[in-house]
Length: 87
Image (tube, rainbow, N blue to C red):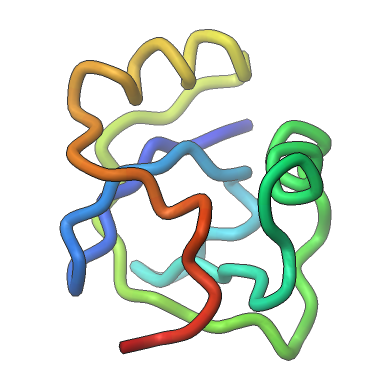
């Protein structure tokens, strides 16, 4: 399962694996960028304990990656693909 989430602090919208989201927070990998981040999301990589946690609001949930990407696009203000540290 995937979720389209909005990061509370930055208002950025992204598609993430549901396993990254728990209790209104999303785990986000510190070191993954570009294709490595894309693959981690698409393959539902399990989050590591050292990943940052961000407050999020879930906008949409789906079982299908492609549907999630299409649902993200209309609401996407900015992407967080390059996010590596908290501000």
